[in-house]
Amino acid sequence: MYKVYGDYRSGNCYKVKLMLHLLGQPYQWEAVNVLRGESRSEAFLAKNPNGKIPVLELDDGTCLWESNAILNFLAEGSEFLPSDPRLRTQVLQWQFFEQYSHEPYIAVARYIKLYLGLPKERRAEYEAKQLDGYHALNVMEQQLRRTPYLVGEAYSIADVALYAYTHVAEEGGFSLEAYPAIREWLARVASHPRHVGMFD
Image 1 (spheres, rainbow, N blue to C red):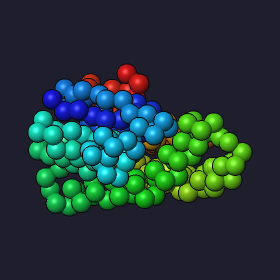
Image 2: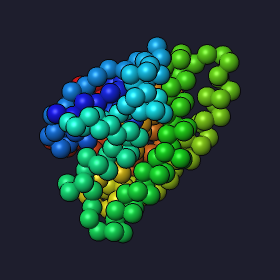
Image 3: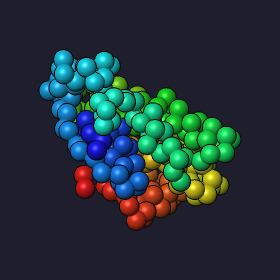
Image 4: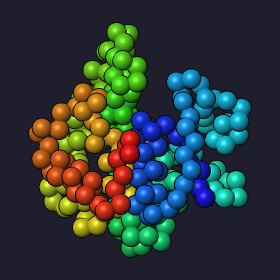
């Protein structure tokens, strides 16, 4: 059975949890409190020398890290990762977008507000994240007006990757009122029969 080391509130960890549920794959959850420095312990660094969550530990003790890399591993051979090279590249395109143009703004704004309580010394940083966060939402909205999922007609790990922080974007101060296609997509993703919520 897989072990997942993570924090339920983390969107990156939620990606892995959601993927495992979509696949019907049993797993064991090991809670890691990053605010208490648990991801910097010697034992944890032996699993991920980068000291970040999530980590997926396989039956043989091998550890995989970086949430989107884990998604690709888990989804291999399933309906959630297309075999066609063009479509698979588009999945990667959205995963790179998530890590470089979405997560650094939407997830970090959420972290400052939700985890840290929006301290005065980080308010300027928080406000600076809003502009680029809305730009990322604009990019998603354009695509989702054309197709039901980020890569065409099928639910894929591209959607898992971007659903994780988009569905809690309001916790980072982002309003989704002006994004009807994103709101419809969020509902579409959540309607999957094996869907699981962040705190379920």
